[in-house]
Image (cartoon, rainbow over all chains, first blue to last red; front, side, top):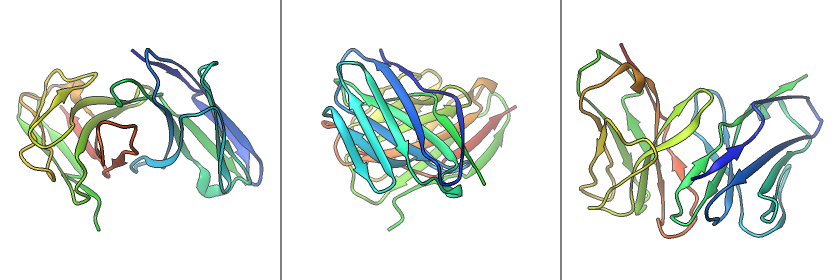
Length: 109
Length: 114
């Protein structure tokens, strides 16, 4: 089975940087996804990491350390529209996604 | 291109009633999935289909059934609804089931069982 942990809530100021951590324990590993979900909407894909290191995509970056079972999502230059839940999901040997409970980020002016 | 559509958007259902949630995708994806999302628990996989004609059980399959008669449609049926099935249900699809492919989600169905 999978055990995926991420903080429940985070608050940050517009223009700031926020780092959302995700730790996981899995019987097999085939990559880690981050999804964004605005309230009342569907999750949408943000990033995928399968190799160790940092993947940068505009204001968002995602990091993976397979040996530590650890990932983070970095949101830079925060905007009000970034207020959402951020879901960490791990794929195992069967390629099915196991999701963490999500981190709700609130951006304040 | 619509992507994935789900119907109904929301539903209030009496316990014991039968209900089918509909899901249709127009991306010709091979794999489709049903999740439920509950506060504090995140998304949990109910059933999946790797390709048309096949289905499999996810993490929380009890009380639910699915069918995959063709590539586009993947309905989820609650044979006899119970209050614990109150949740938001998301359908998703991915191009391949045999690789860590990005999953694309429908808008969700909010179901309340009384």
